[in-house]
Image 1 (cartoon, one colour):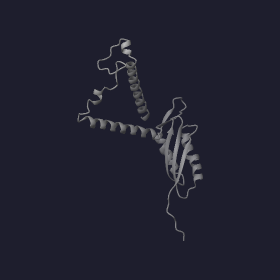
Image 2 (tube, rainbow, N blue to C red):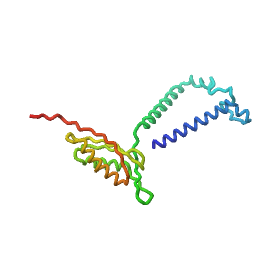
Image 3 (cartoon, rainbow, N blue to C red):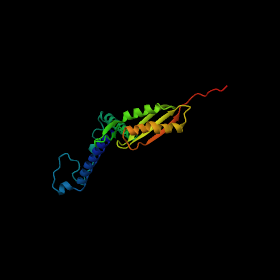
Image 4 (spheres, rainbow, N blue to C red):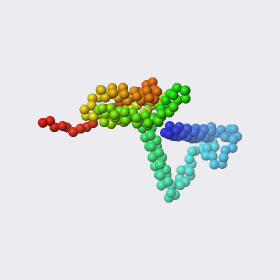
Length: 198
């Protein structure tokens, strides 16, 4: 959805800037007079001596009681929408689906959330893993894994990584028909109370 919003916003902003630039350029070069083109009566830039905003336009609603609250509310909404858009850009995107080769040339789609859940459950079933969190990123033809493991206090990171790669990740790769399934694994150790030795 964010990709669609980005494309629509970029397209609308580009179109608005293009039309505004062409209108100002036409007025600045006095093209309507040279080409004998009649412009609408309210057209603001008809010649090179016209200004973008006249003094009357700039001060028209200054004395109205509703003007400043409306202006401040519109700017606040614009700032909130801009911040939402910026935060959405910075957030890492989750892959919604993986394209699985079915052998008939058409392929099938595997839900990304389903693959994440199965992989997390299989990783948590490994001895020494208390909790697993899996996120699928990348493109649907070339997915990537980000895995966070919370290891039990007695677990050793090396053997746990080998088991995770050889069992859970390998099962996910073969079941989804992928040639490769790169993974970034982050390990944390579970905190535990110090034990008293007598």
